[in-house]
Image 1 (cartoon, rainbow, N blue to C red):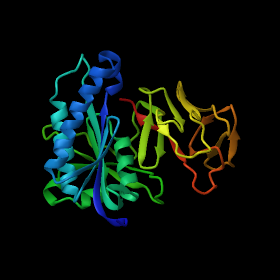
Image 2: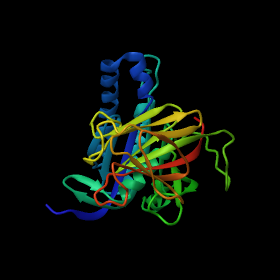
Image 3: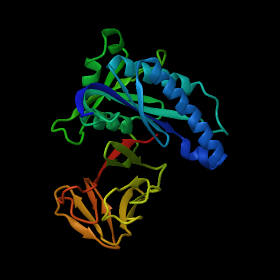
Length: 300
């Protein structure tokens, strides 16, 4: 079957608080609890003619034929999870992001702009929040459109202009505080957004390190044969992020505006935005790249 390009609503829902849950309950019980939450998310996907594309750890990726279905499913997901009791004194929540746009469907998976933008929306969402784009809001039916508000405009990788971002107001009786233009939060913290393929992960105060390499047990599994099984590690130290190379062939680091440098059993601070290539330059064909962006976000 050949790949086809068509409009679709892509949704990512991520369980927040699972790390603490594993610490409190232990691996087996925590895994069972997280899976029960994922089952709730899957049911709401099916209720609105959606399809679960895949589950990655404690995150669900789903596709819907229209923006309305994605928004309704996201709202029901939040309502259901918010009503759950605490598990071992840990209250779980979810972060949801979705976007309606063109995506490439191939072998039951989706790729392209809609996927990348939806993943970026999910990465921006806080626990208990649903984030989407203004373009997706424009594709909603008039009644559902009233349940959103525009909150900011952000830069999205691969897009020349900033993207207006909206929040879905899934709690009808919640007090809404509108953001003024150029609003700056009183208390912010630096976070590191890491993107590998269609997956985006946020390294913030709740996660201190990620591992990268060819072995499937790493946080980011790299398919490139030039990569070592454990190629490197990204660490949060205070309010700074560092890449530590542990490989045989080295890591090629490019910071925006700077020339590519090679790290061999060395480390460097990550700033601004850039790319990491594993075992050979980023310009080599077929390379498996990890992109990063350092940005300030309101503290939770």
